[in-house]
Image 1 (spheres, rainbow, N blue to C red):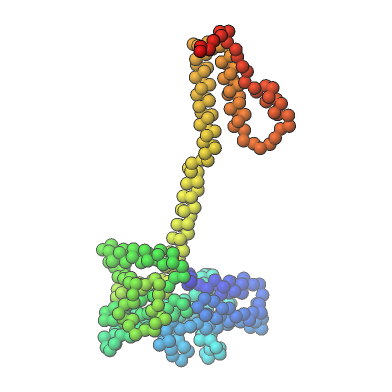
Image 2: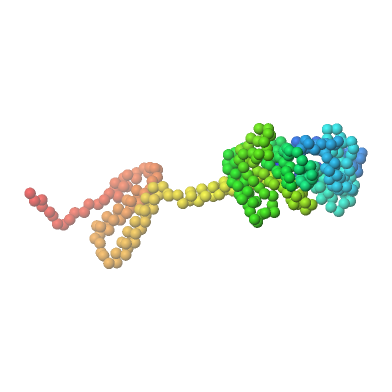
Length: 373
């Protein structure tokens, strides 16, 4: 999944290491990153003032290729990155599309040295953004009105291509969405429907209109089957001239390049939120589940006995019971307490104690009765 940040974390770390080193370090390092991007950083004590950075990145579209593999517009945008510190070397190193010479002496003397390093680390984002920016800026040119409008396949990530279709007075961006898990498809579908409803509302009328469909739009007719086979449908945005003016073009370009990443980030966050709520709900249900029947019986018996004991205590003041009944109730209460002990531990000699002391006494009446025949 693509990152939201423009800087390359690994490249920035190496450049900061060179910047913070007391002496010039010997570095000849190859760095591979997301989207088949390759960096080659070279630094030598024999040339302490300069370091060399070469980059090889897949082009966003194979239709944009000139002498260096990059368009003239892209080369001009790269030159604007810290022009007093960065210099393009020609010819480029073999196997790479761009080679830069970094003047570390000027970087050390710069007030915003870390900001300069961050801008250099975002070199790949600049190359990709300028390619898409060049396509979007041609929305009002005359050549968009002539001939058929064939979709341009853009590959920001090998598994996440999208299409740009030039049309009169607008450009249509179509994103085929693919997900590995069925649960992700459900969450993403709900998200797309909500995005379509919100994006087409009056409150967001200035945003590019959004449309989601489970089938490919008619503009993609004739494209290869593997590019149109999805399980998450197709999301399309209509980009007009007001979305690519000087103030909004960078934001529009970066939003399109990171749309796949944004959707997957939303799906992952939503799935994590649902799982946390389910675990929390389960813990709450476990706490209120009815207890076992044995525990309920014990509690009910204890409550009944407590009520009986409290009732006896209140009645003792009013009713005088015979000693025989009092003793019988005490023995019965004590025997019930013994029965509640559910332990399987056997105590040797306990049966003798029970036979002798827990046996219910027999009481004889002073009155006698004679059976009548």
